[in-house]
Amino acid sequence: MKYRQLGAHGPKVSALGLGCLSFGGIFGPTSTAESLACLDAAWDHGITFLDVANVYGSGVSESVISQWLASRPHRPVIATKAGIVPGDARGINNDPVYLRSELEGSLKRMGVERVDLFYLHRHDPATPIEQVASLMADLIHEGKIGGYGLSEIAPYTLRRAHAVHPVTAVQNEYSLWTRQPELGLIQTCAELGVAFVPFSPLARGAFGSPMLDPDQCDIGPFRASIPRFSSEYWPLNKPKLLAFHHLASDMGHSPAALALAWCLHQGDHLIPIPGTRTAEHLAAWVDAADLSLTQSDLATIDATLPIGWAYGDRYNDAMAASVERYC
Image (cartoon, rainbow, N blue to C red; front, side):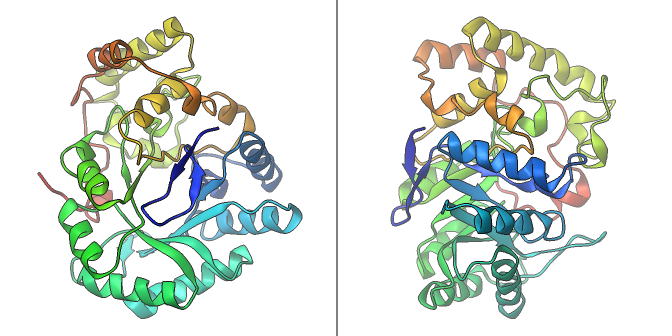
């Protein structure tokens, strides 16, 4: 495993992190034993960066991390988040009192006194980002967090927050089928010395092996709510995805590993966090950081999946309401 810097002043972490959303069961049934085995496999492969949130499984994912830490000597770099209020309405709360309280809850669930990275999960425009950044600076000075991050934000929000206190990382969706961050956010992160952490770099399973295919299996309610997997758009997306899967096979890689290698080649400050709940799926992509792609390889990938190829939005209207739009 290769390593990268988590922001200008953050720790060195594995070039690939592990997204722990699925430990909470959102993508299908799982067990604590299966999640612990996945964490063990990740560590054995050199992954030292774990990404979780208070709302993942209503705290279940953080509790799994707690059990893993309590029974192993490993000390990974851990990121968690707060700001999304769970429930059908999926509200956003950026009030400093609320964020501080949620952080304390996360620390308690994970059995730690400090977390390395604390993200604002979504920005509520009713709360000035400068107010959030000021709180984060206080939490850093108190030793509660090592640094702070922002998620699903626009470049202008990053600049405003960074002016109050340096931001460690920005986490937005980014992959071969979601490339909006190329329109200024990745560049702004590089300019300011901020790590860019792509989530869902495997396109919600579309780059998995086998490919997550609503024509062949139950993809679950969360993915079913995403327009790109709908009966309207999936038949248009599937042929392009199959072409990429065939390309990966011809190049001697799994499609997941190739998709992650492409992502890593977009900048040295990118640290993707693919998610899985099984050691088996992790094994299909964990070597991506060691893949070297030539300019010809990258051009072939871009020709297979050019910018803007995907049909349908990456979120439905309800989920998109809390995402900052730009460009």
